[in-house]
Length: 238
Image (cartoon, rainbow, N blue to C red; front, side):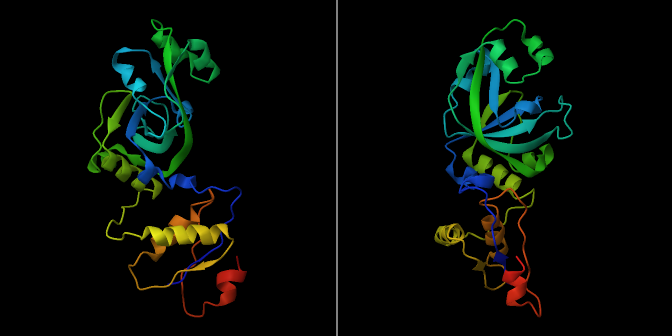
């Protein structure tokens, strides 16, 4: 099996496609929301009470976004992406939330509140295929009747890995050497083409897909080896 990667990157993005989300998050939180418009942009809730967990969130934590059954979205009851926390919670008024695009009708339901937490998010990565509630529960995620709650690091990593893989099972028996991944990253940054050669099952496909997603939002192109495959097929064609 041979793969040729020619990555078209429109800007330098070592962290694109959630490369470090599964390994570099300090903590993982789940946001359960009916309002999909703000997903990946910010978190918000009334101040105090059961929402005081918003005061615990710190820069560098990761938030996995779950769309609840009450949403009008076609992706309700599923996990749709992951973000990194960009700033700690600050207190704002209704005007700021309306300016941010929070639905006025929904906000009116919080009529008794005039102060709200606002947490900025960054580097949102949408899962190629939403993870259903049933699948998430099989991965160890426990759904709570709260807007925001913390989950274990291992559970968070597993959920993000599955989400970024498009819902496919994570092959944990293949542990890619980090030195190989770094070598591939540096080669791609240098504008080199890569040819992966090895026995079946050693992780060539995983490494190829991982590498192709480092710098671009475009789906990777993978050319599988076959009889008569030439240098022109692998390199010049791309």
